[in-house]
Amino acid sequence: MIIRELPIDERPREKLMIYGTSALSNAELLSVIIRTGTNNKSAVALANEVLTYRENGIAFLMECLPEELAEIQGIGQAKACQIVAAVELGKRIATKPKEMRIHVNNPEVIADLFMEKMRYYKKEFFNVVILNTKGEVIAVENVAIGDLNCTIIHPREIFCKAVRKSASAVIFVHNHPSGNPAPSREDIDITQRLVKAGEILGIKVLDHIIIGDGTFLSFRNKNLM
Image (cartoon, rainbow, N blue to C red; front, side, top):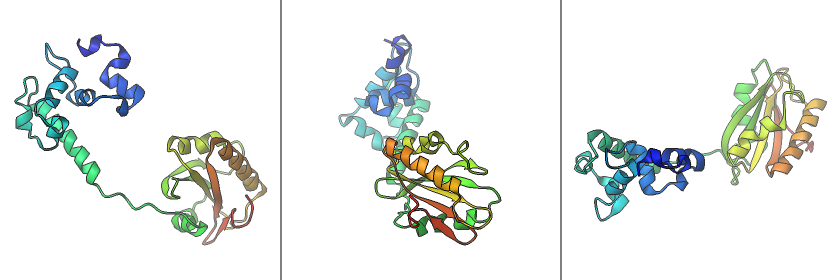
C-alpha cells in the first residue's frame, strides 16, 4: 500500500505531527527522511529495505557511506545523502557537550544574572525564570512590559511556557525603573495570586525578585511570600 492510501493518522509525517517521534518505528522515521518511494515501493517499504540491507540493521547507518546506500534499488544519490546527513546530525547532537546550567540556591544568583541589564530599563519588564527539578535554570521568558497590574500579569501567560517546559519551579524577576526595589502593594498582590496559581498547577514559586539600581529585593528573604 502506498502511503497516501493510508489513513491520515497512519502516514509517517502526519503520525509524527500528531503523536510525536516516539510513536514511529525505525522504518517510519527513516521514511520521513527518504520522503518519497518509487513506482512500486512506498517510502516505508524502501526504508525497511535500507534497515535490512546489512545484518546489523539500523547500526549499519552509523558508519555507512552514501555510495553503499546508493546500491540499494530506489535509493539514489540524493536520498543516500539525506540519510547520511541526518545520521551525522544525530551523532553531533549526541556528542555535543552539555551546556553548564546555572544552579539557583540563593537570590543573589538571580540578581547577578539580571542586574546589569535590567537596572537601566526605563519600563518595567516581568520575567519568569524556569527551573528544573535540580534547581537549574532551563529558560527565561519575558511575559510583560510596562506598568505591572492585574490586567497585564495574568497566570495564564505566566505559567503557559513553564508548563510546556515541564518546569518544577519558577522565580519571577521584574525591575523598578525608579531604582528603588521596594515592592508596591500591587507587586505583593500579584505575587500572592501567582503563588496560588502555581500551587494549583504543581509548579512552586520560589521567589519574586525586584531589581533596582545596583540593589535588589527578594520576596522570600523579606517573608513576603
